[in-house]
Image (cartoon, rainbow, N blue to C red; front, side, top):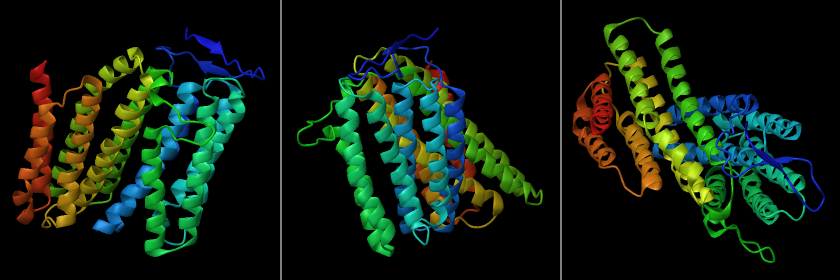
Length: 391
C-alpha cells in the first residue's frame, strides 16, 4: 500500500501530501480522465500546423504547444505532490479539465478571433491551480512560499497573455512569445519575489515515480493521437498501393518511436527519479523540459504521416520534408537529452540517427512523398536494432 503522511500546516489542513520516495504512488483514473482533453489539444495543434505550413505557422504552433505543455506538466507536478485520491484534488482536476477543454477548443483560431478566449482559459488554468495550492497547503509548510511565488508569477505572466489576446497580428505573437520565454526560464532562477526569496527546485520533494509515469502516459497519448490521425486519414481514401504502403510505413514509424522511448528509457527514468537525491531537479530537466521536444516531434510526424498518406505519389515539398525529417530528428534530440539527464552521457546512437535523417534531405527533394517517409522510417527502425544489439 502507498504510504502517505498528513499535510501539516499552521491551520491543520486535512489534505494529504504524497510522501517523498512513494515509489508505489500510482496514477489515478481521474488523472487519465484529465489527460483525455489533451488528446484534443494535440489533434488541434497538428491540424493548425498543417493549415499553416510555413515558418510563421510553425512558430505559432510551437508557442501554443509550449503553453499547452506548461498547463499539462504543471498539473502533473501538482498531483505528484498532492494525493489525487482525495475529493478536493479530484474536483480540482475536473475544473482544470473544463478549462483545458476551453483552451483546446480555441487553438485553431488562437491567432485570430479566438485569441482572447485561449488566453483567458490558459491564465485561468495556471492562476487557478496555483491559487488552489496556496489555499490547500496553508501556512507553515516548507512548500508554502514556493506555491505563493508561483501564484504571483502566474498572475504577472497572465497579464502578458491577456494583453496578447487583446491585440492582433505581430503584437500578439510578441506578447505571447515573451510570456512563454519568461515562463520557461524563470523557474531556473527560483521564480524570485522580493520579500519571499527564491525557490530551490532541487529541494522539491515529490513522488518521483508518479511524475515519471505521468510523462510516460503523455508520450503514449501523443503517439495515440498520431495513430488516430493516420487511421482516420487512411479510412477516407481509396485503397491504392501507394496509399497502403504509406499507411503501413507510418504505423511502423510510430511503433519505432514508441520502442525508442519505452524499451529502456522510460523504466530507467522512473528508477532514477525514484532514488534521486534531488528529484525536483531531475523532474524539471528530464521530464518537464526534455519531454517537450519529443512531444513536438511526434506532432510533426503525425502531420507528415497525414499528408503523405493523403498524397503518397506527390513530390515532396520543403514543408513536408521539414515535417518528415525534422519531426523524427526533434524527437531523437529530446530522447538524447532525456538520456543525458539520467546518465550524464549523450547516446551517440541518437546523434548518428539524426545525422542520417539530415543526409536524407537530398533524397527527399525530388522524390515522391512516400519515398523519404520510407527512408526516415528505416533510420528509426535501424536505431531500434542498434538499441537491441547494445544490450
